Every structure is written in C-alpha cells, then in structure tokens.
Length: 149
Image (tube, rainbow, N blue to C red):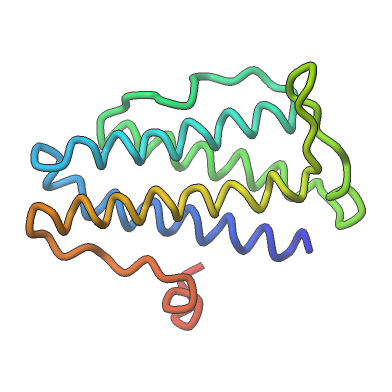
C-alpha cells in the first residue's frame, strides 16, 4: 500500500508542475489559479509537519510567485519522498494526532493529499477555461499510461 501512496504522490507532483506550466504565462489573467496552487503546496506542507512532527515553514495559504512556487513544490516533493521511504504498510494504520482532539490514521492522510490537490487542480483548469485557455490534461490514467511518473 505504501507503494501506491508513493505513486499517487508522484502523480500529485507531476500534475502540480503541469498546472503550474499552464498558469505561469497567464498568471495576470488567472491570479486565483496561482493562489489555488499555493494552497495545494501549503496544505501539503502542513500535513507533512503533522505526520513528521517537524516545524511547518508556512501555513496553508502561502503566496509564492510562480518561480518560487516551483522551487517550493520540488522541496515538498523531496520531503514527502524521504518520509514515504521510511514508511511500511503496517505503519499506515498509525494514528496521527495533530491537535488535542483530531486523530487520523496515516493512510487516510496520505490518501487525502493527492485527492485534495486534484480537487483544486480541477478548479484551476476551470479558471483557465474561463479566460479562454485550454487547460492541460491532468488525468491520472492518461499520465500513468505514458509513464510520466
């Protein structure tokens, strides 16, 4: 199961970069799209801090430029890769307590992150369509068939 999560995180990273490539030249037309992609990154880093216990460098709504966002996405991907490399299938049931009252199994958190990202990437694609830009294909099977992650 950890292998599947690693694959989904690789897809998530690939799709984030594809969407960033699409919005970067049109950021003046779709500033909300850059905000949504920043949120995908911010939420990912918040969850990483929750599962590792490490300090979170920023909250769920950072405001990086496109260039800085690309660097931060790469940093987040590398950090998740390191974390996932240390996990086992048995550890996916480990409960992560991230507030005094919130407790979630690690496996559910790992499933949430790519799903959350895909939700917001769908919104970004709608933002692009609204200004007349054909959005990129970010379909999992499309990318998997091509061996893109």
